[in-house]
Length: 447
Image: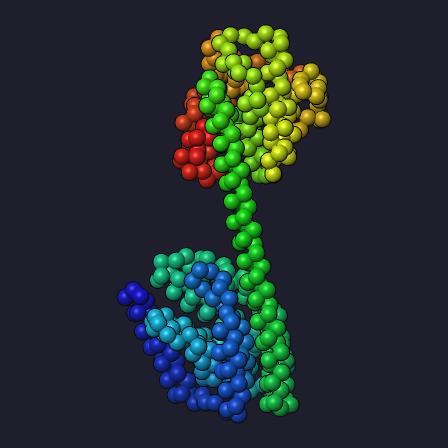
């Protein structure tokens, strides 16, 4: 434990002692059956042992319910005692942590009791008791969250995370237990102290609510982690496929990564859902994977292809679909890859689809693919300047390419720098790392 935490613990103990002294001087004392107070302390102790963790460094429990009941029925001094007793089960090392939480709960109880007493006064009507419970609950929540945030800050953690997690739970739970405690307090005052035994029912129900909340949070966290791992696995797999293609065709090495970045940016520009943006990026990475199934020598041919060779080359999109359709989770991507050489006028391949029959992401891949192919050098021709490639895209609008896709890409290129226009590989590796959380090594291999 740091010196700051030890000082903080001493300050809290001093605050508790000062509050207790002020209450004694003010004539505040405990009036009522001690067995009721002992029962409330026991409930608080048991409840605290079943607390749930809302952040890596903050926990909550339903021990606040007996604390609030004590604050309403017996006042601040009893509430301080119930709050402190709740932490007896956590006694142990490190001692400073136990002192901090015990002192905090005692201080919370005292302030909640003072608030309740100020609101209720000598009137014990149901309406006044309900107001007292509401005020005490707010005081308890605000003080508890504030002290927990200070503790988190002193431990070098985020106090904001504590406020958000504990605050959300308080907002949900407070409207549920406030009227119950008010009714029980009224029954205690108007009927018999034995009605306190009914307190165990809402306490157990509230504890179950907290447990369900924790289970839901855990499930959500697990699903989020699983989703992130699946996305990372998909990118890793796609990068491995691209590396296999790049190893075979050194002239197109980096083409897939460039198309992936262009496709993603077009999807963003068109306002597509984030899931479709990721789909465009991943499909762009693997759009040419079918080329690994082409005959040897075809990709490496230094000159233009013959008609028969071009017919064979056009099979790569269908081959890519067959490869990807056997990969779990790639069924949609396989369809996009199959149709990324379709034309809006129906003259493309392999199925001659037109207009709206072509998947939108396939249309996006087609534009990104054509632009990067034109601006990349080949053994039999030099790379085109960006302005020429952009002009050719515009000329093919309505026949080969979708109008909206070309317009979105042109808006991107119009304000882009030269590395982006030229499809610079290093630049795109950095982009992949920044947007998709890839490690530098994976980003480099993807580019």
